[in-house]
Length: 170
Image (cartoon, rainbow, N blue to C red):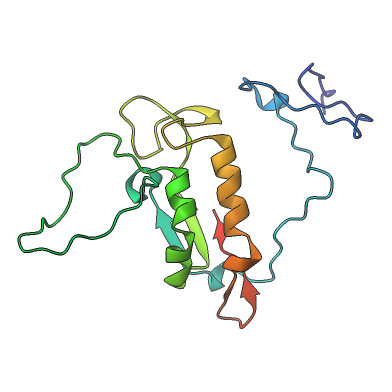
């Protein structure tokens, strides 16, 4: 195994009391501190993946975080005409609608990729930077907020195995 290289942006061993986090956008995976934050607890589950009810969600096509009410009237359109381009769904729209997804009985959400995409790519699968969240989808903090909200005890639903568990994100 080759020796580990140190970088000025990486936390050094023995520096556990002073967390050095990256300022700006990392350009290499070696610049990312993957050490769990002190005191952080993570979601644990005894459920198997075969027990999950997974909701696949294409971020761009789901919701854009703007509150709306359905308008009931004669002649209402059958849908919204969309270009074959970015439509506007974002991570905050998912966070805002987690109760809707959980209310369907879903126990896990599979997100389309949220990494930075090439222009004109709405689906998330035309990635040009695996180290950054696409700004059209939101920010790294929006993604952190989504995971935190999905795993919150208040969002826990009773799973088929009879135990209460939060929504998983894939």
